[in-house]
Image (cartoon, rainbow, N blue to C red):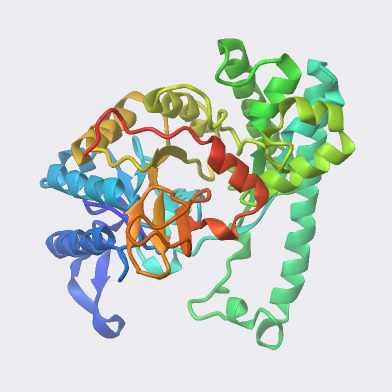
Length: 431
């Protein structure tokens, strides 16, 4: 759910529709008070959680922070309220829309930057239909292994992989185009229907995502240092992602597809590609892969993230993460892993303000951990092997796997390894 405390500029003068799709005679901006009451009540529900007090996994509340947000009456209390939810249940996602940026946030971190044509669609909101056809993820550590320490070779291989990804996107587009052309007689009949003069699935407006995995391990293999260990490593990481964006833009021109960068969530990819590289490049992979090699709980660090166990403060992590975010149009997210800590809501609100003002970070979320007992039905803060209330071992652990909450017993070995490594923070305040 994309949430604004103020009325978004692109909806201000749009005639509002009410029951049965009929115009109400007002614009959406005239419903600001009703909207604010509704969203306040919505976060009351998020605060309480489900019947057992567990956090709701979905839908995800993406709250957009804009300059106008901080000038809109009542924003202080609303920010404190959603920060109470962040401290208690972790649901709140803070999406930072600076300047005239307008985004629609989806999925784990997927976001669509609204262009002029999209803002024109806002006059008829039902036309605001966006999609990412697919995501192709580049295995960055393997490129470092193949380059053998040679900068020129590294960037040559990276360019080849990006072009290969573009060609994969073209094949997918061609295949889906054939299915859509079958219309109501095809397998995608619902997507092919034309109720407003164009197909429901607007293929010409689709994005074709280019993701990345293991920037930290690529830099570590190539330079001998992780992203957080030196300015040289940090700057080289930025150079790699800037080159990816430049090359992706060139492929857009060459192949006629919109191919923005995205931080791949990599719920399974971080583990799968690490396992494949351990098989094909055992010496190089063993030197940089994260996790526990003796148990097989290994993984590559997600996308452009620094090592999840790096001994750095939350604000430093958010600042350094944010350096990459302007290059990653299709969505980026930074985590503050809370563990069993329950920070004061005001400290979270202050952290959010500072992140908006002092960093380039595009989105942050605060992630607590929970133990849910399947016998007594109670929920406790933190991850435990037994229920703190009845001592039962029939329990479920709950926290964010990447961009959403899920049960830990469904995670692969790589994500379990990452969970053990995560550095938890309390923001310095614990209630």
